[in-house]
Image (cartoon, rainbow, N blue to C red; front, side, top):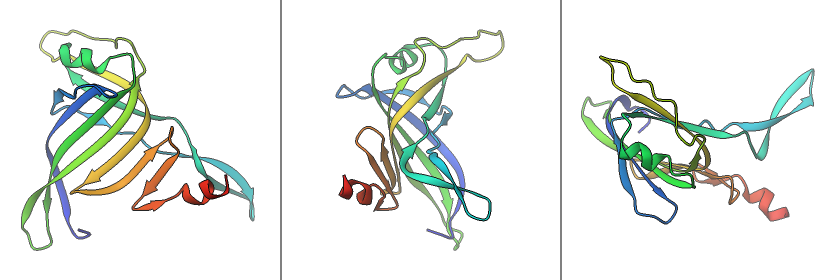
Length: 173
């Protein structure tokens, strides 16, 4: 709801599998940086320079998963093939009436790792935190059962808040 206050992420899990393979939990309560989807732009002359987004063209989309420890879950995340990654989290929300609830959120990512094996630093007294960067080709966000956006570069899909922004472009091709 619009007047809800989003308080905190209570917990999360990351699932991963090669496309068409068996989904496995590869991390719990790990930090994930989801991709920014940034339009390519073109400059127009309008009382100076006006930068305008180009519909249907995006800069590279990247994400990072911070994994605790070098283990089987990390090895699963490093498969040198296209992966389906699902991030699930519960978010604590307070309504304008003061009542609190947990809202389910999911991000569905299609991506491939940018490294074969990331740098791993082992330091006494600290956990091993490993960063795995990915190039993202598909990104779908679902919150409380509602699809917020669904973007797929390879199938030319860009739906945001229920509107298909590629429909006009597709109709003339």
